[in-house]
Amino acid sequence: MNTRLIGLTRIPFFLPLAAATLMLGVAMSFTAPYLSLFSVEQADMTPLQLGAFMTAIAASGVVASAFADKWSDRHGHHRELLLGALIASALGFLLLCLVRNYGALLGIGIAFLGTGGSAMSLVFSFARGAARRRHHRTNAPSRSRRCARCCRWLGSSARPSAR
Image 1 (cartoon, rainbow, N blue to C red):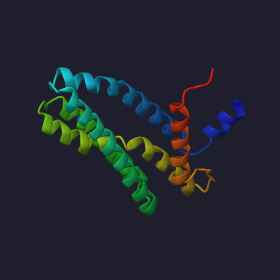
Image 2: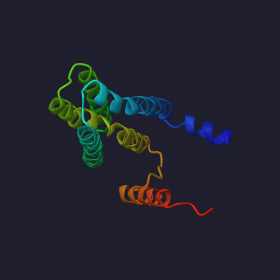
Image 3: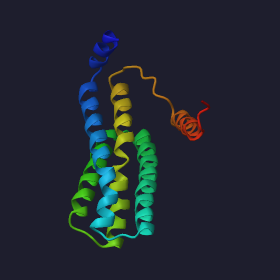
Image 4: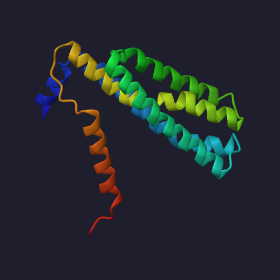
């Protein structure tokens, strides 16, 4: 096990990439629970508005991820897209500090927070591109295999366990 970890550290950009992924995951896990509290307590959203707001952010993140992954695979500008997604997310959270109008919050959520949600998939796209540039083989699964694996996992977690 330790030799595998040592081998990973020799891959170019692995340590900064691992650190960025860790920080991004921690930041997302901290902000997600408080976004609903903010929406209800500070922006006075009704339950229906909150549901629409959260759904719009999630759906725009899926659309942004699909677009960004496809575009970066074609054109190879992984770093610029990742940086843009992170800046969009930071700008979106900054605007949440200033805006309380539901329509404006919905627009901010779709345009900035949803776009920022594509950053996690772009981290892996950046890693694959960096590995290709450095002539390292990657066993990165295709987009369709990743999708099938996620659907299989979701299907298995939705079924009640037989105990």
